[in-house]
Length: 221
Image (cartoon, rainbow, N blue to C red; front, side):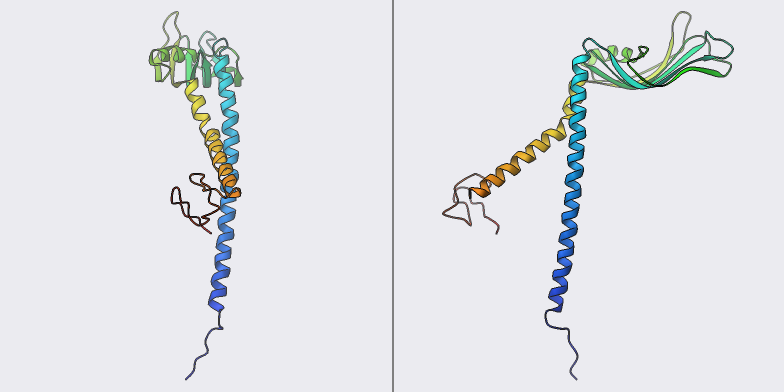
């Protein structure tokens, strides 16, 4: 009994169609990755510029930005309290942390907030005490404070990570430098392909288009 077979070439056409769809999806994914990487590179480059400006300014200007509030006890106005969480740059060191500053006895009543919100270079927040402590370790430090107020002295509780600003600049420059390197290699490869040179060593391959006689690199058709 003779069976009915598939039309000749049907499997090949199906495989070709599936391969084309797979290739199209792969190209779209590569495009998305490339655009995402370009966006991250732009953000990293912008961050690098800001860090460099902060680095230069830090030697004559303390810069800080973050969230905080002042407050005092509703019944005892002398019992004041301040909170701050943010970033501060001073004298070439960057501090990132949070700090609670308190004076007087623990507040027995509700806390009245006299100022709250985001602050930028306002009111001289005391993250600088972390930066001063980081000088003894070349600017690298993980610090914390935990002591209660005493008569004539403020109490502090907080934690901060300190790094030299030049170190933060190096980290933020990593993606832009990698992008420049990839761009340079891509332009060099295109130039060598145009001039029919070996992509690996730059040897003239016009006489031997399939394989470089200098380094042995094969050319894929």
